[in-house]
Amino acid sequence: MTTAIIALLTLTQINSPENVKVAEAIAYTESLGNYRAVGDGGFAYGAYQMHKVAWDDTNDFRKKNGLSPFPWYNKRYKATQDIMCMSFIELIKHRFKKDYGRLPLPKEIYMAYTMGYEGAKRADFHILNAPEYKQRAILRFMEKYNLVK
Image (cartoon, rainbow, N blue to C red):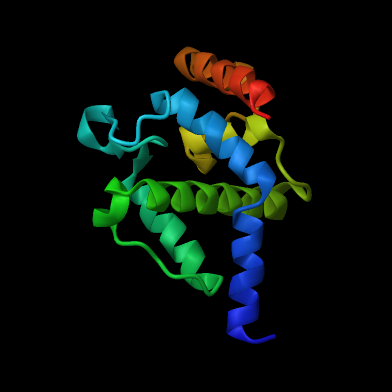
């Protein structure tokens, strides 16, 4: 397969209806969908409250899959935030499948998103093993996820 075909297939995966649904629930949970939100003392930005380290990790994943990276300064653009969130979701799925031999459930994706993959893994991807404030966020995510059409 050529690089262009691989990139197109990867892009189709990233923008899947399931990833869009998860991303919508993340945006609601993290910022009520505010694309200009700034949190965590200025370290998290946008509707999805991504940190630069997650952004960079996602860019590495995009490059490995033949997709263009987005510089951090593009974080202010809605479309870029959407693409990076869905790319990050796909990265989480990739890591989870490698470690557990199956695709993660939506709540497991959000745990990895909000706690970092290694943090969620240390919690065995069980909500009750997460800090209490993360448990509340996971429950908000699941409420929104189940309401998103």
